[in-house]
Length: 173
Image (cartoon, rainbow, N blue to C red; front, side):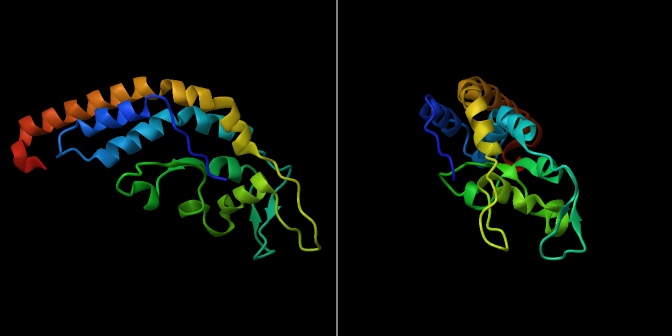
């Protein structure tokens, strides 16, 4: 289940970021914005993530195990190619399944925990919607802090652009 939110003031934030000079990478500015704004949500997700009583057996290779707390450790803010598309400028909060959480590191089973999954003998495991609980806890905070955080990020982006123009001129880009 993906969550999409129309935040009050998001159009104003978009207008503010569109007012940046053309030479500034607006997608990078949006990435910094979403990372900053979503920190309370990430903290809540880490707090809500269940930790198994013992190591979990890695299903494809029964000789391997997934260490306790791997799901909690794999929770990050990240961006994908799709979230960086022109006009999208988004990001994700959730378990990473690539990098060090690939294969038996276990970040991939976050969806199994959130929604439940089929067992081999039949039936479903019980869902533990930790990401939904985190969203319910912190969505208000994320939406409230958005505009003030956007202003700070905008000011930093403009200041960085001015410094770069002073040092390198138009050739610095």
